[in-house]
Amino acid sequence: SIVTYQINANGTLKALNWESSRGVTPRGFTIYKDLLIVANQGSDDMYVFKVNANTGALTYTGNSYKIDGAVSLYVAEY
Image (cartoon, one colour):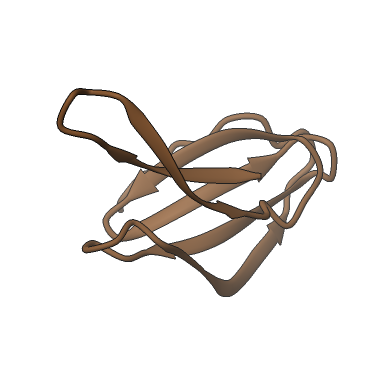
């Protein structure tokens, strides 16, 4: 699961929402622009979520990819 948090004024965290990574053993995460990309090591795939800039809420975009040995991510622009 992926958990979004609120940072309170005193610096403590408050869990806001749990979102399924849609795979098994989420291992790597990266934020690219307004997207969160999650690599699931146990299911050899990655899923893409849109991040709401105001609330931090995640919405699955419908995009997923099979990747053998998905562990970490890096976004390269060409």
